[in-house]
Length: 459
Image (cartoon, rainbow, N blue to C red; front, side, top):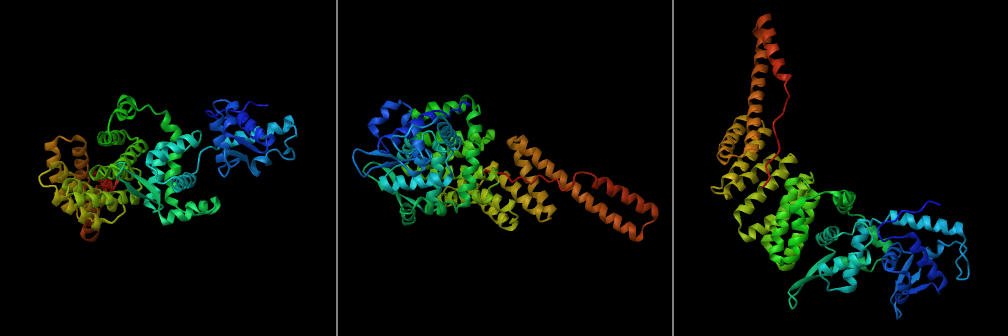
């Protein structure tokens, strides 16, 4: 028999011992009896509970774990406590238990189901207390890392299943179930699953995050990331930690680690909500929008930006409002809503005053809109204004981008001019005129066409 692989503390042999003990002892295991199985017993027991081979019974004291029908079914016709388990049956049970270890990754709807029941049973409960539940009860289950639980909490709030309530006497906020959440809480697990699985947005976004978890763990994030993740947060208060997380999110964005950036911004937003820091929350939402935009989830990015926009308007922060209008316009532009995007870019420009970096990027974005509308003269005018400011700022990457687009306008206008020449030659020209016009036109058309750099500038 091949030795089954182990997965952290998960052990098919230990899980078999726990189930077999319950089978032979009135189909139950008391908390005090777990000590005989060693330090890893509790984590393996939680796996069996999560996979419904055991069920925790609280109706009686002391509390105990009862083996379920599903657990007994593993033993076939050897369910009686006096039955000895033959070697072949034990081998098959171990293989089955190994399979559930390999499938430990919890599904998105299961995380939300757990959260709803934790809040419904233990309210009021804070974010950290919800995290602590997953760390204790499902520590061996893949997919329940702190960032994933934060993300699930955010989605449950966004969809109206849970709400915040103030705990002013403790200076913090906690969760409670909404009426919609209470409906889930009182459903059977099957009915709740059917309801929660209907959210395509959750399933898509979270499954992608889960698939990348193993790869993320292997990434070497460097000394700065290590410092931000492990050293500074432990020694800082919430207000300082908020901006440490914002810096971390920016660093990850610049390095292209978008999932890591999203985790930082989500955690930042959660803390900001707890301490009522509206400015910090606005910047966290802006960061989340940037991540979603770079992942080409444009509708989600627009949603984050509009939430940020509402806060920026309340704070009367013109620079932040300008940035977020630019970013909403970018979302509209890539979805071919060019006129709507142009209106937002113009509003953004009115808010920036003499801030040259913002003026340059907004003029650049307006130029893209006019280029898409085939008003190349207006696009050239705006890009030349943008280029002048970028040269003052010595922004080499942006300078090259604008120059490239100006060159493409020249090429496109030259092509249109040669096409007109060729049409006139066909109408009134000699054979030599037609041949010459045709050669000139083909030479230009052989170049890369429609190569204007259409990446909107993000703030």
